[in-house]
Image (tube, rainbow, N blue to C red; front, side, top):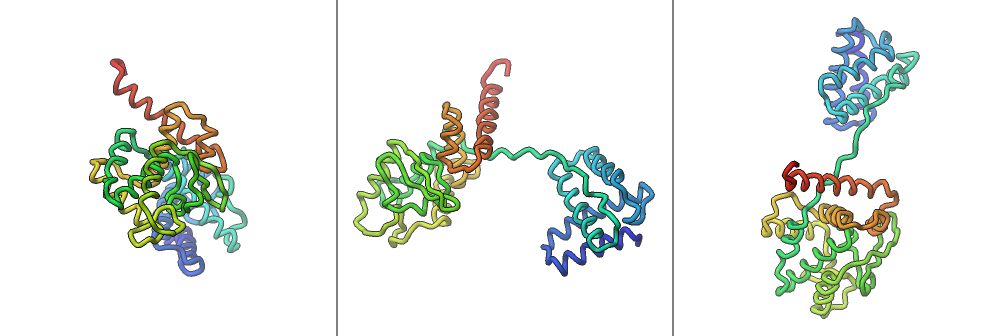
Length: 290
């Protein structure tokens, strides 16, 4: 075993004992650093003290040449940076040759969303002639009408419900006003009129307890199956659909940001990319020269 292999083993042992790193993390580090050691041996290097910045930069280029994705290359870089930081911190190296190694640019993943036909089928799945069906129909309609997080939806109280708008308490206790449409108003109004309890929660279980996230999630999956929606459905997918469909129909980005409760508009801008991708797909499918 070379001196470089010993250095890697020392790093992994410290991660296991001193930092209590997860098994999966240690296995990923071991796999990526074993690849690094093999590359460096090919460069005639057997000890960490021989490693220079140019060797690590060449390794990053070699990873890209192998066709690895930017995310995979970034993961390899993290393992490499952690190794050489450890060796420098333990005074096993006079400096850190990985310090100025830059990682690849990683584009943000576009959130998956539901098309309008799928949303319509999902909203029509509950039976509003039953007590639970009426509640579920009201919750689904309100979720799609407002883009609330599921925690915000189940946390609503009667006092938050107003004619045409909601008072929502979001992340960090920040409050915002969110409008909703006529369909949501009608269904939630019918649901509230059907109840004769004095509980403060806007949506309750059959035992008059506040709805839970898991309860709503389970019922949503059941309705998606009944509606024939083949894509994976979650409360967050409906939040994505709310934002994407608004932008597709000409809504102002700043207005969507306020309704979603995003502190930074760059978080909301991801939905403009989703909308553009969907429109491009429609064009390619429908245009005779697409």
